[in-house]
Amino acid sequence: MPDNPQDVIEVENADASGAALILCEHASARIPAEYGGLGLTDEAASSHAAWDPGARDLALHLMRCLDGTLVASTVSRLVYDCNRPPEAASAMPETSELIDVPGNVGLTQAQRDARTQAIYRPFCDGVAAQIAARDIRAQPTALITVHSFTPVYYGAARDTEIGVLHDADTALADAVLKAGEKLSHRVIHRNRPYGPEDSVTHSLQIHGIAHGLPNVMIEVRNDLLQTPGQIAGVGDELCAMIRPALIHLGLQTQGAAHA
Image 1: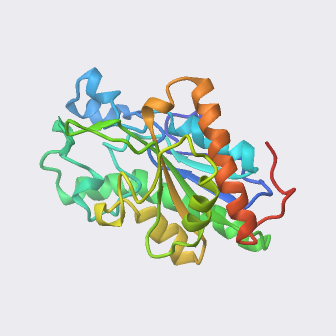
Image 2: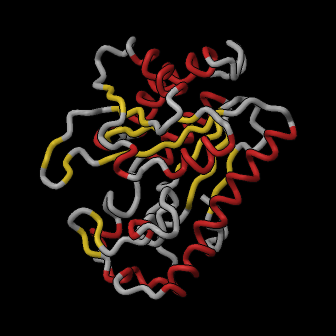
């Protein structure tokens, strides 16, 4: 994570030679001091409502495996969810699943604008800078966003283990799912546990589709990411899905990434 707590994004391996530009919008549960903890209990502030447990470490594993670049938010999604546009209520939610967020109740437009400028804009600018640098290098790029999800949501158990999500552009997701057919022990689904109808593809739209980049969102059930060994195992499985997909789409050659 950044040494300076004022930094709201983390960028790793900016000079990567691989095609993968990896985003992790929900990498951290950190609530900067000026937000007064959002009025949350300690339990709520560290729960899956505040961040995606295991997602950052998984994203780092993928970054190393694919020789990619990582851009991650270092602020809790309850302060600002960088996978939501500023006009969305869910960008600064008053409630997340069963958790009330007192510090987000009754925000003025000025307060919402201030958070947008402090957290969302720097994240978007950071991603745009990486895309621009890759364009200058004429480097093929695929946008991959990495998330985790809770095994039980509103009291209902989820059987999906790995979700491969897409919006209008299905090319990369199709290729990842095809490669995933070899992982017969895994429960892998398209657009589950979420899909475009759940307003979760904002980053794919503005950072991927708008720039003409192949794109995919990866969701992993967080009970599979509880230890470093689990994260490495799932990370290797995802690499075995993503690497051939990138090669299939002509974004990198067989030897361009390494385990």
